[in-house]
Length: 499
Image (cartoon, rainbow, N blue to C red):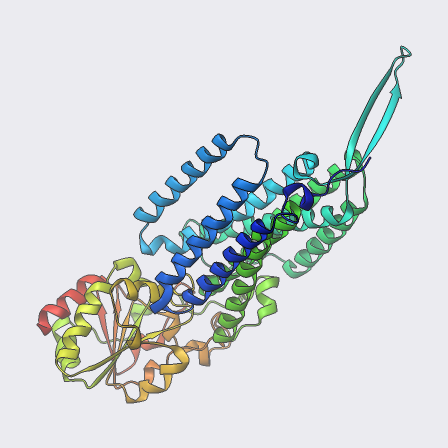
């Protein structure tokens, strides 16, 4: 007995207004991505994204046969309230791990939707046909039963959604633990990890194919369970070997995974808006990851394979910083040299985010510009713990967009700079990336701060190292003055000395 396919059941194919609404939502999502590509238009882009999502959600609720609209409304209200409170209270320093946590929820949602569609395909309009049977009992009586048969194409879509969602969930959990400091940022290298990953991935593909061809709960249930478990496992295996210096690329890649998981579920549910949204998120995340890999001189394929930038023999020196001679200065020393300079380039890093020093830094820059000093900001593609982290912080402090430059646009100017002012950054200015082949950051483009006439390096103490766990020769250069203090406190003292 045949059943109505999902796309016809939802009414999308016969109602042109639904298609039009989803098209408008898709246009808003595209405009959102365009707006988010620049700090100056990011607020507008964010509003476009919110409007597109509102249109998509309302259209889905109005046109689909939902069992209990009240329960759906309550769930949306609870989720929206939680999201609003988190957005209001979250500190910018915790934004990277928050993004990773949200990615994990998207992945888990894809897994749950896929399993719900498998357990009750009729509710999702996925029953292509039904198989009826009768069985004779020992007492001579007979019982009748049956089950819905899902088409192979729908099962492939379902399997892909579950697999990608599970990988996104478990990988994002590991990223969250690393970014929040609950797990070491150092690479955790398993023996034969690449072989294990390839075998696990091949097993998931084979299980998905067998699941698509199998019929009946007795055949399909063990296959989908095994596939789900292996997908959760490979998510952990892919992210655990990745070191802290490469976590911004990981966050971007997990964002891409979450988009593809949503797109796969969109095919399962026959929802055009989910397909469009997921494809946009997945493709934009993949493109961003590729751009960041090029900026870091990493292989894009090694991101997907896991363990890039990780070597059991690498890590550089994490000790001995205080045993080497260095020059320490005060806020008054820095203020005097800064106001004598003609050109100052500021390099912010995660330490600035932790200290919430961006507002004091903006005040310092304003005072220097009043004294005729040219001030520019240099942003590395992987500064902070997620893509665009430093840009968001500087925008929050209302730093003019025209004063903010990316690595390739400003790196050549350090030779003409009087002062390179490093605040809370480390790995992105470490010359070991250019000279030490055993370093975990070797090959990553870094700022040429060693070419500046004077380097001020704000750091809490000489005992710590960067997120990659590598000591920095910039600390000990002749033109470097170490300003050992909390970043915000030190900048505020410099402002007082300047004013």
